[in-house]
Length: 201
Image (cartoon, rainbow, N blue to C red):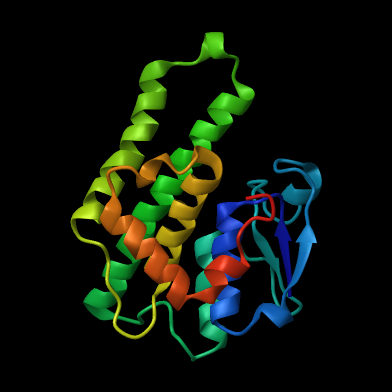
């Protein structure tokens, strides 16, 4: 399999963590893609986004959630996605919240990188930051626990917090001691978190 990636994407990191946890990393070749939005990338994913998983036995798979669930299906060890019942919906909801944090954090980076300061809309920036702050407050009030192994929701939260460290200077840590401790515990329990840290972090 080949995984198309570009730069230190937190979505790619989430997939790479999944591959490590599932013991599949040696079966996946990382391939630097053309710039997001390029025609070459759109030939694999019409949305022009990474990551994209290319398979020999089927069409390309995207986005990161779908890739992670596909990889989870290839190896029964350390299941990341509960198959049914309340546990499944809890995991998927937790992951959706963490992906929402990631989306907002990425939009804030793009806002600073691509839009001239004179054209920025403060209300829009504040709305994105509010999504992050509200999700962090909920997590801080009740850090998500796991019994034997972290699941996909936990991996996604870790990827989101790692991205806030990487691109937002770790400002989230102030006022969230429970989640700082949670991320430290996650890093100890899941070596893949450290193994997939962006090179220029």
